[in-house]
Picture 1 (cartoon, rainbow, N blue to C red):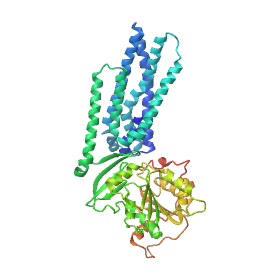
Picture 2: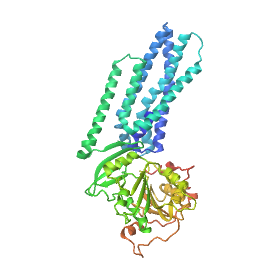
Picture 3: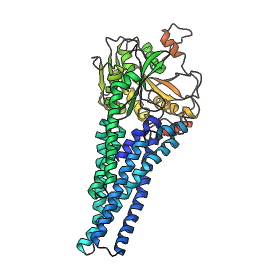
Picture 4: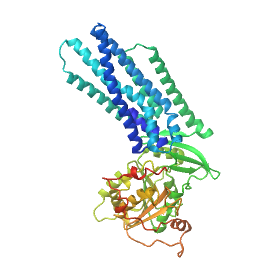
Length: 525
């Protein structure tokens, strides 16, 4: 279980952390365990049968089987060591060789997790068979084999449960993925020594390799954080309870920038080193439009903090908001993300006008909407959603009709909701947008679409801003009306052509049915 959870972190920088990656990892490890179980049971029978055929005593046969069990555990430890070593090169190799996420994730999982999965799978049936054999030698009569098998399987399951909670709640929050794999290898080596010390030399050698790897990895990470990042622009990897983040330096048009990424191929947040408040990404500047529609906005909700670039911008009065009077609530799932934003992106976490809540955006919507008295208007003038890290990981649960109803409940009657979506506008690649648009159209009377990078190319995957209004209203026309330059530029991206009927194209996303992986399958083409 630790291997499965760590595996998702290993592959995320190259293939994302979508259900596709999880499916490949779980499927490959389960296949390895299944094959290992079959081989382990057969190996135990053959070994004990051979020992008995040689005229050996029960005790001698059990000793040989114990030595074999120790060798299996040592082999599993070597498999974990191999996974740690190959994880440094294989995912990147497959990512450069093929464009298909499904194929890349499967091949990387197959190469990385088959060896440890296979040998770990051999351990349980081998240990069960050995236990039955030794118990029968002691009693000399028929055994309650069902009880023995049940007890051994229960112990194996308890180990899986312990690995799940240990990995999810502790290891991934405090240690890097390579360090965890090396630690797993050391634990398996310790179990191998408990099962049988001989042969000792290869186990000592493997332990020394693992310890050296741990020391080298710790030194490397320390050097990057304290020297390499500032001097040589070496990217930093930050492991949080929810993601593997990478902080790197780059440049845009001659200006230095710091980038934050959690998925491959794109940065999630960015900051100019010479102007930390300025917005780097084009789509973030579209959040200025709601202020043009509601200039008296005071209470603002931001779903998704990321690098806190938009909150910084709002609090610095760059958007046209009366920054001295605004109250900003930021809902960010990952406290590690917030800590990274403070350290590397100068997030204004000490600003009294901003409140940060570390919880899932949908959980916040449900909880806050349910607490509102019936008939009372929503507390927020503006609600922004920026929870798409990339198209690899689609947060569908904030784009369903149920989520839209909750967001409408939180919004004032004259408020504005705006959401960043990574999608195309039309064609097969636009089905995700149309399904989310259909969901919001059930709770909002007016839903507008603003492609960001390619205003007139509807078939290209890009940032698309969805704006929802509780009641219909006429938007300003830059061609005939006087509009602020920033808002006028955004309004020129407005997509007014009719959309297909959602019922005939892509049904509105629903908590019960949200096939977002199907909609994003061909985004990489």
